[in-house]
Image 1 (cartoon, one colour):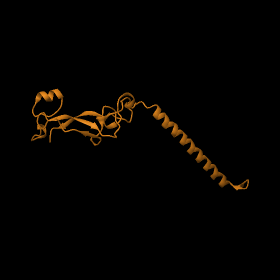
Image 2 (cartoon, rainbow, N blue to C red):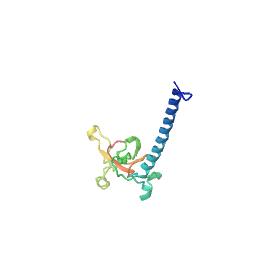
Image 3 (cartoon, rainbow, N blue to C red):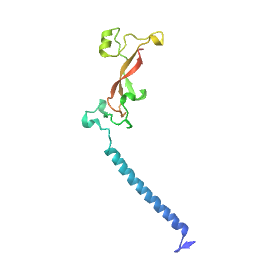
Image 4 (spheres, rainbow, N blue to C red):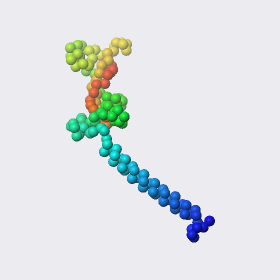
Length: 144
């Protein structure tokens, strides 16, 4: 069928192209306004405004919203943290009690003979997590 000298199929095709371009423009505008709103309404505030930057210039974040994608640094998996070796108190019970963590003895014959302690860990540079970036990780075996 021909309508006004042009086949109807060409008119429908041009209409679909116009609708597609309109949708693309609309989506582009909505996505730009959404990204602006997301950064403007961010509930986590960068610590550079309230605290100095954390270790090695990595910004620290305050933990506010439990539904936020930024988690506490202490909840990071082992792949994203760096931990020190357990502190060796060489049998000094007083030093162990004052510090609150560390090993009085290392090793053992059975699993139950091995002491477990907390170790000082920090989040790797480039990993965004809520403060503090250094923390104690529990249940590390006292082995060398």
